[in-house]
Length: 355
Image (cartoon, rainbow, N blue to C red; front, side, top):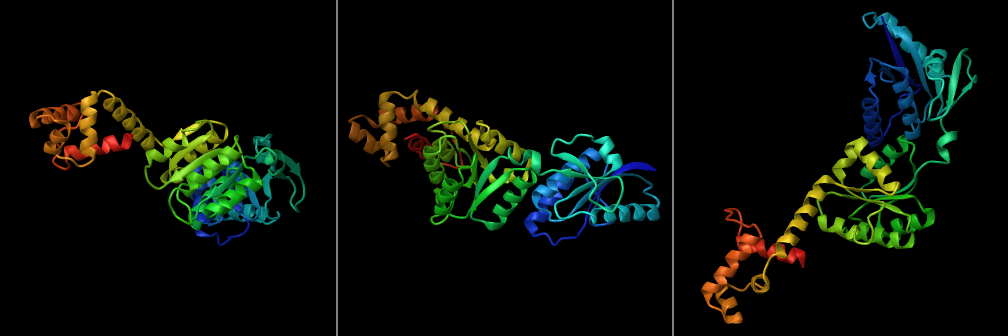
């Protein structure tokens, strides 16, 4: 026999794909273990079960949830079936959005940070209801989510709501994003860098406009690919309350939520891959600063596509002198022989990047 916490919801709702995926992720994150019954989850402790119950209701599960602690013999299928039936019966006693718990759960968890206990309201004795809506509702983080792909947007919204974060508006294009933030004045804007109608950098441009209008607005930009220049643009004016993440971070739930809260509280979060590229850019800038004036002139002419001979004619230098300058430039920029690329092209790219 083992002491086990059980969580059950009252109906098997046909959750959309995005909601179902987030729900499955939350069960795993809170240490839940599926059982033979699709609506019953098994936990090692009551605390984890209650945390998941609150997260599921914030997600908008739309049913009543019950949590109980039982002695279960996992080798005795009849015993398991009886306990599952009891916790399901308790779940069916509540209304949509309720979290009900047994006396033992209440005794083990006399206080729950996500809400306050109340008693009664069901046909069963010794049942407590957790009021999870009241205490934290006024303190919720208010967010606008701007993402044109409906499935991704729904997943982000569901994830945020499961954590008690209030999504006050959604947007699927540039103009709607501007109007939504202006109308709701959220604490945080989470936006894709590419938005309709042009699918260029509309998300980033809208964020910069809104930051000038609402100086306390925190912004978390999401990008499909590493775009260090966009991160640098975002950080140009001020770095407080700014975040730039690759979209793949959204699937790493804890990292994404921590980033959202950090940015909302005035911190700065830049994706590690983007940070690495920004650092590389700073190194390049430092290397370019070591070039002598004549070497910089030669590099500028290389960027215009001139050959060594043409550069020599332009600067009235010998071809040997130009070759010497080119070798020095490549050495100072740390560009060595590379069978996969042209050294002159690499040097020009670095120069243009800094320009």
